[in-house]
Image (cartoon, rainbow, N blue to C red; front, side, top):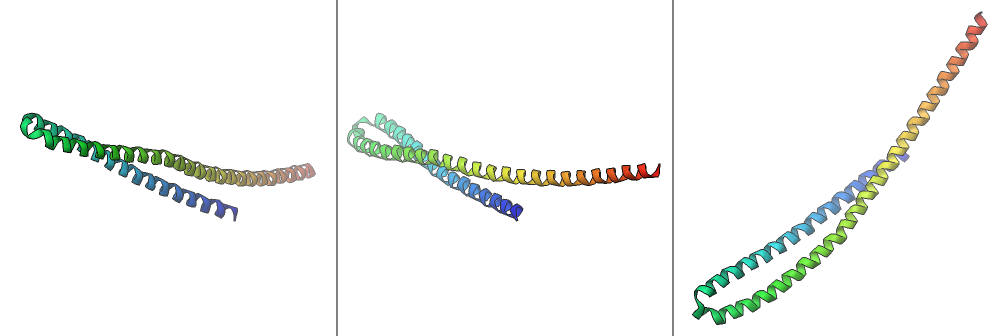
Length: 143
């Protein structure tokens, strides 16, 4: 029964670890998307600056509006990126814990198997010793 328990535990902990790794992947994809948005925003700023420098008479008012919108947007994105990074850091600990729990279960199972094997070896050796002892007694009797 113990063997079944450990194998079930290992299966459950593998599943839990896979779930955590999947969630971590999702969190990472959100972060990548946010960083992509921020990079696109920086590109838009560069493009707008180029337009502004080429058409100074048009630029002033429109660029001012654009710049203010960008600053606000950039702040929001930076905050969301920072929050996402904090979440990922915390989650990395959860993944590490799930991994440790799986390893612990695997070690327990390995120890159980080793103990079982040692017990079988001990029994086998005892039987061999007994056969050897009977053999010796028989040999003595024959002389």
